[in-house]
Amino acid sequence: MEPTVKASARHTIHVTADTWRIRLSASAHSHPNDAYARRATAISAIGSVLIDVPLQGERISESTAYDGQINADWNAEVTGTDVNIARDIISRLAAVPDVQVDGPLWSLSDSLAAEAAVEALQGAADTARNTATAIAESLGGQLGALLYATTDTHSSTPIPARAEMMAAKASIPPRTLDLELAPSDIEVTKEIAVTFEFLAG
Image (cartoon, rainbow, N blue to C red; front, side, top):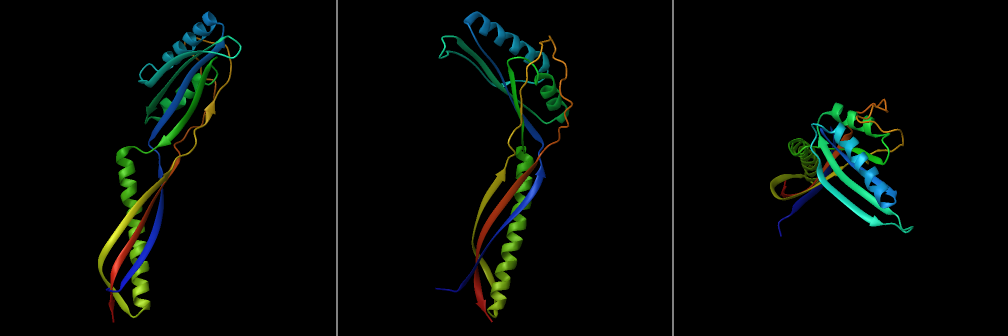
């Protein structure tokens, strides 16, 4: 078996998120007519804020609660890239009765995630090669051809915040939060393991 040199490395970079996702829900617990009416009012308030923002994954459900009353629920998500739109959605809906806002959850778009992965991989590869070179030289030889390389990617996503309060309803909810909203940094980590030929000196 030919002698080889193995090395591994990981490299982490921080990338500012360019995409947000907000989870919205309308939920009322009461006798049927009241629960349905409250849910409809909450959905209407949400719709008045999301005029130009399309909903995704819309779901509606009803169930009988333990006390014989009705749980009337509605859930959906919105995504976007404009921070001002996210700020407006959260600040207007945070105090609307029967409405819950979860988010924003920050992430990287496909194109930015691909760019970040390349940058992190380059950093990991450089470190692994430098380590392998140092090992080979410390043994009085040098690196030969690259024989194997395996990679792995990790990323961490911040936990979304939750905005939930009660207040008087309005046709177009006013802003109730003076929100300082900025995209989170996403950690992108690449790991690489390499195997080189070892050329004795």
